Image 1 (spheres, helix red, strand yellow):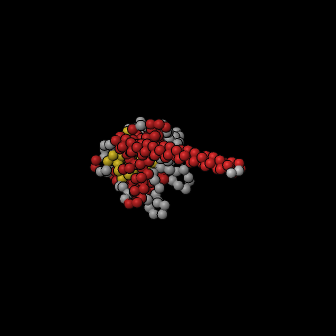
Image 2 (cartoon, helix red, strand yellow; image 1 turned 90 degrees about the vertical axis):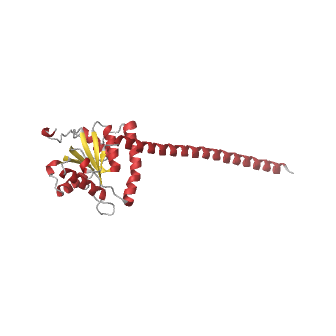
Image 3 (tube, helix red, strand yellow; image 1 turned 60 degrees about the vertical axis):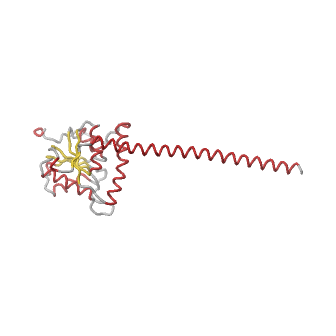
Length: 245
């Protein structure tokens, strides 16, 4: 056998060995990556479960579903949401919150209403729309105050204390959001309780429920790790007359 043939065979064996070595290294790295990925996914899942349990635990006994059982509050705060769904039809989350606030007002459970929502764009004004609907349902417009920087639940809750100088408020929203609002209130120096507006059933309600799982995890991170503050504060505004304090 010629030397050139032997050299060719040896080179082939070397390449084959390198290829097998690379494949083995790649396989080991893939297994490590997979294990790390599984560990992180499980850790994330456990944290989401913990966050949801913790939020519910801290809100226990501070949410109400019956108007008769709600203690009298000077101020009820309606959390904002879009007044129309993506299809253009009325947003039931919005409608149920507005009707709940009006019912509480008529029952004498709240004396003033703070509507807190998003007004980032000139053409999109949640507080103004909430005010219009409340007035249409018989609420005295002089008893309605607007927070135009309620970009999130955290913004609304923190601003009610830091900007509007409240030390106690009744949040009005669906139950899923109310527990998170109570949790945030406990860590922002304001006594928050909440009234559960009618929930939305069906696919829309299911999607919001899934979203809420992660929103609660974010709330726990905001409170315990990041110490997140409202996006915008501005000048303090005392909305309650001296005689009502």
